[in-house]
Length: 197
Ligand code: GLN
Image (tube, rainbow, N blue to C red; front, side, top):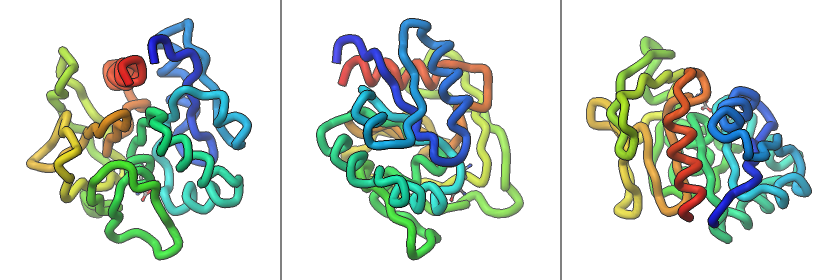
């Protein structure tokens, strides 16, 4: 896609509002919309799936009849960026999930919900991110831990041997919350991916 004009942020639950404002700050010519219905989904060139609670978002995807339309768009190659709970919702395998939650399975990764444990409920870490010039300070909140990735997955950043930012084709996903800082580098990286995919 040469010039993405509309980016959607899934707005069923969680940290969606800040993603909208970060994306708008990246590029004033972008149209950024909150997505709550299939009709809104059809308007977007790419979708951000925010952090929050993956079990709740999973339930709301069904209640709002968004699961199949999103799966269809992803199968058609729509670019997507899942952050924290969003990473869980994009992964192929979820450990410590609830039985009634399910994911889109478009990034070949095994992720453990709340995998950094109780003591590390929330923490910050300095990352070196592939494709990003400056060091990046990432905020983690009850983050999922990426325990394994398949060969189609590129690791863009990791801490202590665990991937925390990954990419597979037009899908990007982070264990951290890029919308909770003032640093736009990760959103810019996603917009670059949208432009080239
Ligand atoms: N632990 C949450 C979940 O399982 C994710 C936390 C977050 O998105 N900050 O969905």
